[in-house]
Length: 320
Ligand SMILES: [Zn+2]
Figure: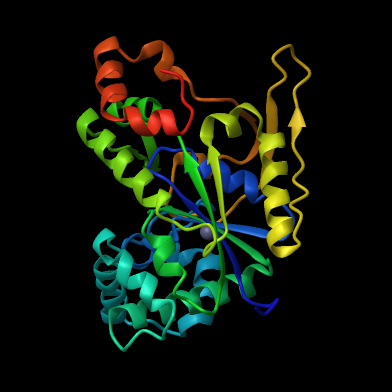
């Protein structure tokens, strides 16, 4: 494989698993650029013109304007819609077997071929504009690594980020959490039922477990371990990347001098147009585990979620 190919670290998981935190921590490493949920670039970025974490709208953001210009020149709306439809058609659980076969041969003309070509151009442009060798993407969709492994013009690795299903279910229950502000008005984070968040959690973990680490370099990680010891966890990821690509992250974090000795990260402005509100945080930010669900989730919701997701909770080593 060529040393010049974009090296992609894809974070797979389920929504609310802490992927934006991991994304931003990784972006503190040498030669790393984080791009957030790149799978939403067609709908949320190109069509929705979402607010980038730099404060500008997608089409006014210097970084993304340059990436799109470099990758495609001009991209007509009809082509953007075609790529968005291609994404929805290709990146589906039922296509995993076909995607696995496609990595052995060039896909025939069609949605997969078009989407793979556009995505390859996108990664090459991100690499050129950022000047970074490593690109962190946090789309989380667990079928997506099977699609990305079809693209010959990138080198892919996957971090499967796991979070306790009860913490995720509790997060989804909140209805008053502000996601971001648009034109002075709050945009709230979505909420969903325990049954749906548990079902989605199971689906995503099972799909991620289908990723074959011998075919696609894979690192599994629990959010709780990352949040409790960011420095130590980043060191483990750095060792993984060094074995894989001879690349050390050299991430610099600080520790508070208070009794609890929390980790402090000094975030710069990134260009992330889709993801958790953490993407807007700039400057010194304290990193601490989000364990509110342990104190505030009622016993009935906790019992239901634990029961529904029990086999995988045990597999990932969670206490009941
Ligand atoms: Zn931006």
